[in-house]
Length: 358
Image (tube, rainbow, N blue to C red; front, side):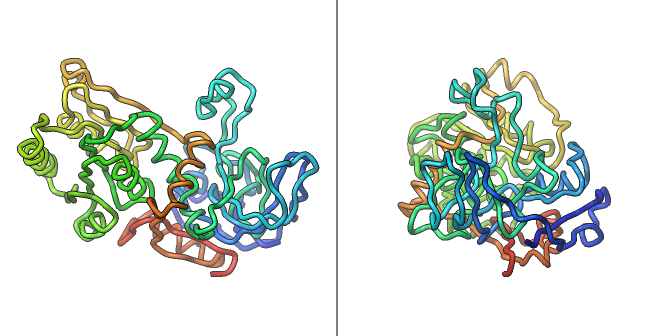
């Protein structure tokens, strides 16, 4: 079967040099596994890290991809919840399922946790025509959710749901700041916060502000402006005048990191929460500790959530309350172009998909 393979790293981000379409062995199911034909797969930033060979030196040769949706074509003898013909999507959080963290419902804290398609290998991944995963790592796709939408939701919906619902525990009526609302996680973050009847202020580059409002944001702010924080705070003062609540942000949803970190801390209310799942602009963020101890600020880290949380998000997608935002679709043959677009972010709004044949 065909797959997108690389046999060397590209620290210079020259993906065209390393990404090749090659034949690899077709998988046969282990007793606990589901085998499915890939209909759509979604790009994630861990693809970039893998091809760079840092911060994790992934095994070579390597096939990337952590999000895939498709149709089941075979099941192992111990599989009980899936059958041939089922429509499924991957849950890429690979954990042991038996340690204290896993049995406590915190599979994301498992010390043996790996991310399928990134740390697994060398050729166990999403960007191939056929895939296989343990039964516990696939979810059924609701009837009125397409393969494309499911693939676009897999990791980003799960991450956003875990950040806001699992970690920050948002409540109706709160003011939520979604940084980078035009990204995959950001676009789901906006919709999840609105599902919980929160007031949402979302940020993005100026060309994406109207789109933020189209998917539910109450306010949209250009975070490239030097005084973007002042604009956000002014909005919260307007909200305060209408509702009587104190100005400021209750929950800040961050994956930008270094460049906007400290400003977010200044915007939080007393007792507010900043939840972070990444740092696309860098990890070395300046932190004024006064905003933490004087204000009783909660800073929460977040990675992927549980399969149950993915199923919760998919449920609301099936009800039409949350939708996947898809930027573009590429064939496997155009994998280098797709990843370059994700890296540069130019004009990007939502998720980029790849298919064996676009």
